[in-house]
Image (tube, rainbow, N blue to C red; front, side):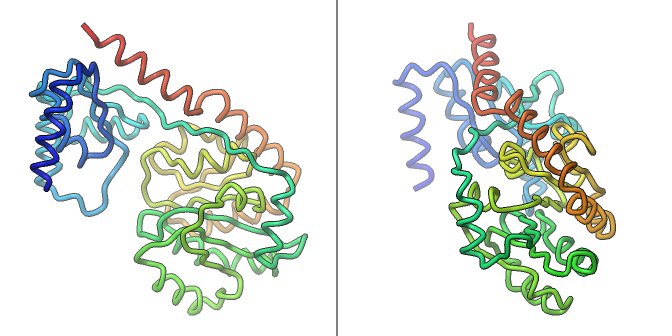
Length: 303
């Protein structure tokens, strides 16, 4: 099936008169760039969105070889740190352009805050800490769970809500029980109402171990939320700690707990950081801004 699909893809490109092909993730780079090259598509742009957990070393070697070859004309990296990682992997620096991810600001009714909090059975003054993402090692949700005892010691009714599902969910649910914080943590599973959950939240936490350029962080910031995020790939390219969010060392439970408590203790500063965060995204990290950069790169590369 895969070979048949690639043959059809090649014929489509060969007969379609396409000017550019953009591929996303290492797997797509490996599969789609060679047919695009053979079909004579002038611009063949790979992309690098960050580390892939479990990606075999031999595939990473072959990916570097492919991107350095004529099969790829460019590589778009989603952050400057990801660009440096690509260079360390052996990809030629002159082929790499940094294009940050962008989002469309969601349209959310202000009344959604009260309605969503009601569905979560939260009191009006109950602090809600929201984390979003697949429940995997990458997202570092274990560090949020480990920070909860310190957070609860200051805010006895604080609630951490994790929206997302994944293979580590049963393990983390057991960890919450072992830590004695299971009454203060809720695992919601996969959700399609993340903007509404953000509207209901008092703070967005992103305790990630690694990232590329985190979309969930952009979504929280454009919703005007105070954010506490790990210092991982891409974060300090959008967050200025203390101005439009707070950055803490990755995997540092004490620093995470202290930052969350500090934000919850100062609602006025949290609100100011949230407003600055929203403006940061609107000024340079929208989907329109991202697409214009891809468009400019393609147009400049065409014969």
